[in-house]
Image 1 (cartoon, rainbow, N blue to C red):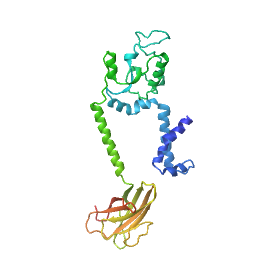
Image 2 (tube, rainbow, N blue to C red; image 1 turned 45 degrees about the vertical axis):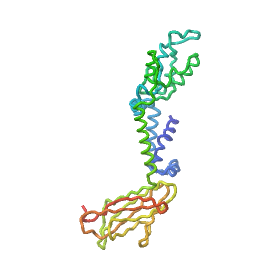
Image 3 (cartoon, one colour; image 1 turned 120 degrees about the vertical axis):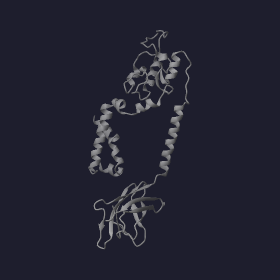
Image 4 (cartoon, rainbow, N blue to C red; image 1 turned 180 degrees about the horizontal axis):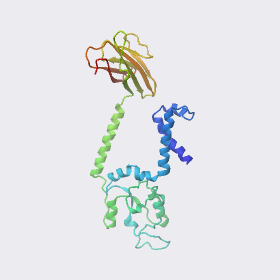
Length: 322
């Protein structure tokens, strides 16, 4: 059980590395320096993995995994599945050396196919929901056939239609190209194209702008209205970058980025760490508008080297705004 728990941590609990900086977390986790959330969710993921893989085991495949239901919907009588060829194996029964094979099947009822099955099913009973098509029964049966001097392939990849045809003494035929195959092939190509397009066109950084909620604005001593924002920049590249920030939308506004000095009309430069998330506190002040509507601010971030540009939007709140 200790070994199972260790394996469960490295296979299930390790998902916490998706939600923190992985190198920093890997260094601080064994020292007790990681965030409390990392230990909490690491323990939950480890325990659930241990329970599902170490205790429930095949019950997970039978009752919880959606794949058997999907597999049953995708296949038909012409689909190649792990199949017991009953036309050749029946009638089954024990066989002694030097006994005749006449009027009997090749299956010697050794139950090796059942013994090696991780789900504990008997493939000779036909297609079953629990079968994961690992083909271990094929290997076990082929080994036994060689030992008793019979041809291999008593259990093999075959179709229900072909087995039924041979059982009736007819010629077995296989239909590789059929409407179901064409439909699934087209769907796979379309989905793959969409995924490739999404990966090739996605940006190398993200921009998110959050308004301050409490208070939504502040009236300064000179009568102007100031709003506060949190700008979050996500850098997906492995090298540090510099982003040029410009804000549009409200006339006669002044912009102050906490911790960043800006001079005159020069663009505001924000450094961004590699593979990191940087947050900046931004204060925007402007004379109070005469109308009662809130105004929109546009935050334009541009990479100084590549020119890649992303835009974030936020509202400028004031006393007359709804």
